[in-house]
Image (cartoon, rainbow, N blue to C red; front, side):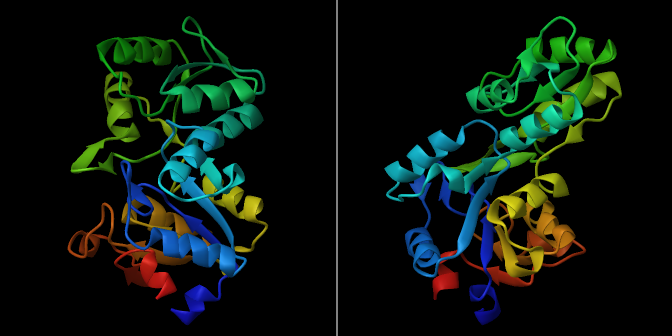
Amino acid sequence: MEKLRGKKGFICDMDGVIYHGNKLLDGVKEFVDWLYRENKEFLFLTNASRKTPKELQQKMSRLGLDISEDHFYTSALATAKFLQNQAPGCSVYAIGEHGLYNALYDAGISINEVDPDFVVVGETDDYGYNHIQTAMNLVNKGARLIATNTDLTGPIEGGIAPACRAFVMPIEATTGKKAYYIGKPNPLMMRTGLQMLNVHSSEAAMIGDRMDTDIVAGIETGLDTVLVLSGVTTRESLKAFPYRPRLILNGVGDIVG
């Protein structure tokens, strides 16, 4: 644990690590206070694409945590940055919420439901047959398929809910085309996080609740890895994975001790 506490930078997942839905998890306030007290560089990096960093900052404020907006980075922002670098000024057909749309607009990417360069899929509460039909036909006409993240499900109060990959799978199945996934465990997002913190991977730790995204992303990017059992992965389910985190904790409060 002392090795972990000595790290300069911390990249933390949010859902299942900091909160479930609108409920702050035990020990989180103490952990955040410790980050500030010890002058740690830290970033809340989430695969969820629904909300903007400002909205995440406001949500944390409602939960009793005063954290500035620049400590948040989402898969929507990572997706918009990827498209901006790959095809400046491109157009997309987007399935998602305003967090994704705002990121795309800010990157100079326009919305196009007729002949877009890309079909981009994130999370939304308004997913239906028309989305699948439109996306399928656009991909068949040549639009390239992009997904904001690989999460199949995500934790909510009282259970789990479908996430991005669940929405992408019908489009992949009906077109025979595989999406390119931007969020964790794609190293693109992790490297951007390290650049934002200005910290080398050897001096940083990844804290997450999912073996298939958070922990493998940390391992493949060279970060110290901490699995917390406050979200999706359990002690029983982690046995199915051929890799291991360095530390397994009940929650982030254990870091403070």
